[in-house]
Image (tube, rainbow, N blue to C red; front, side):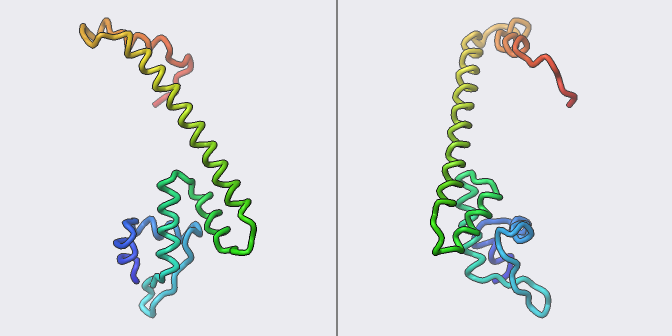
Length: 138
């Protein structure tokens, strides 16, 4: 199948497919005499695997590692477990950070009735009073 057909079947943009080839997520396909890429079932399966991993938040280097391990059927699966355990830890850490952020935003929002003028806005007052002391240039 052509790169356009592969993109259509998977919903992955052509530019992303080419990038995945460059970084080793999918192997370089064979080429026709006219130098067009020809993708096989293997490419489709690896691309679909990468999509599922990305939807679960795995970074590309871990997707590549998982794909590499998947090609070693007789090897123990401890490497796969290690990668997924680390990823789960990262997700749980981000969830905890988001919960702290939500709590802080609730606290700030509770200071405001939503009425009045900007000059007396308690939300902006709280954000300014808790702003970092060092500002970066935008």
